[in-house]
Image (cartoon, rainbow, N blue to C red; front, side):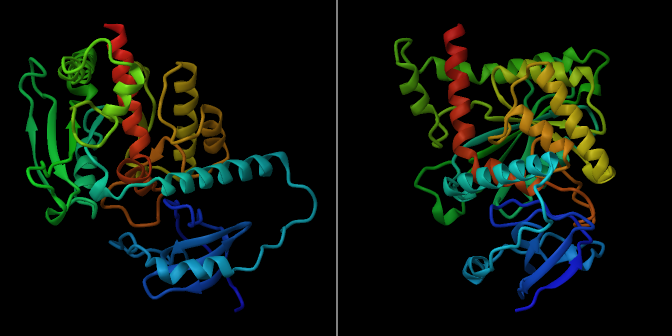
Length: 381
C-alpha cells in the first residue's frame, strides 16, 4: 500500500505505547485509515496510531475518538516495513537527545501498560487536588468523574472539622467498579477525591496550607494504631500497598498551576511532599500556546529541582523532565490539562495520560509510594 503524506493540523499526545506524538505541521505518512476514526501513521522515525482528527482539522465540539478495537490494529503495526534512516549523516546532539527521551517515554509507557490495572479493578485511591483559588480544581475533579472509567459518583461533601473558617476541605466519593463486579459487602466507592480551598481564599496562604497539610497527616493516625511498633518496615509496606481500601491515606496530590509558578506554590508542594505523592499539572492549557506551555513546564521543573521538592515523574528523572520541556516533547510531567469545553486537538492536552497513569498504568507504583511514605512518617513519630 502506498503511503499518503499530509501535514498534521492538530495535537495528539500518546497515552499508549503504540501511539505516536503529533503536533501541527508534522509531515505524516498515512499508512491506513480505520472506520472508527483512527489512522496508522509514520511520523519521521516513529510509527504507530493517532486519531484521524489530527489530519482533518477540528470542528467545534468534536470529542476524543473512541477507544481502538485491539484486534483490528496489532497486525497492521507489526507489518509496517522498517523505516528509512531519513536525513543522511549523523544526527545532531539535540536530535539524539530528543530521540532518547522520546524512546524512554515510550518504553516507560510500555512497561506501565504491562503492569496496568483496569479502572474497574484499580482498587482504592484517594486523590487530592490543590493549588490557587478559582483556577478549575473542582472542575478537574468533575472531569474525572464524568469520564468513561467512572460508573457513579456522589456530591461533594464539606468536612466541617478540617478548617475553622470557610471554604473547607471537601470530599467526593466515586466508583470505577460496575455493580456486577462488586463483592458481597464491598463499598462501591473505591475512589475519593479531596477538593481543597484555593490559596487565594485568604490573605494569609498558610490559613489554607496548614490545614491541608494537617489533613494529609491525619489520615495516617488511624492506621498507625492498627499495627505493632515492632512490625518490619517491608512487611508493613506490603500490607498497605494492596488495593483493598484498608486505610484512608491520600495517595496523590494533583497540584494545579495556572499560567505561572509562584513562590507560594513551591512552598505548598514542599510541605505536602513529605507525606503524599505530588504530581504538578498545568491547568487550562488551552488558554496558552504550545510554546507557552512547554516554557512553563521547563520553569516549573527547574524550580522544583532547585527547591529539592520530590515529585512523581512517572519514571522520568528531573533532568529528563527538563530536557523534555526544553525540546518540546509531550508526555512528561507537568502534564498539560485542558478545559472540558476545548476544541479537541487544538491545544496540547495530556489529560488522558494523567487519567491512565492514575487509574490504570501506574496505580500499583503510586500505592506503593503511599505505603512507603506512611512507613517513613511512622518512624519519625
